[in-house]
Length: 212
Image (cartoon, rainbow, N blue to C red):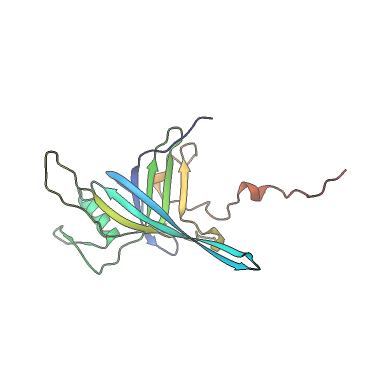
């Protein structure tokens, strides 16, 4: 079997959530200049003991947090407006960016791609929130360094439309051997996230006793 491996990151897209109850989104917008995307899931495990043994063990997926790093999120008016909406800034009538302190950021879906040796992967995190950017400004020395913008972000699981608490999910992945890979960035598509079964759930239970 050929060996796969993922490398790099590209094709970052943001889709502003227009209704957090119905999970409707604007068309994803491509943001070029992705440097790095770090994602750290937050999974909590609670264990109770009784009778000198583990009595109950429960696990809860709370989403996660990370950092998005870009070289360019300000080169066009459209890009500046998008990022302002996502971090809670205001674009004034004269085009300046007002570094607002009390404006509520908009939630969004984040999408990106990792190419692979055999298969590529594209990921969508359905409900994210971005923090205001951090950056380090340094003087030029022998070689100029391009300043990157680092955005801390979080994501949380959602219950997809028509689902129950058992269907909570942070988003979805697709791979380059699947039919939706080419159209992945066209829209946020939460269809098919409800009521999915694993292969083991589909297999009939085997009897523990044999028969003649």
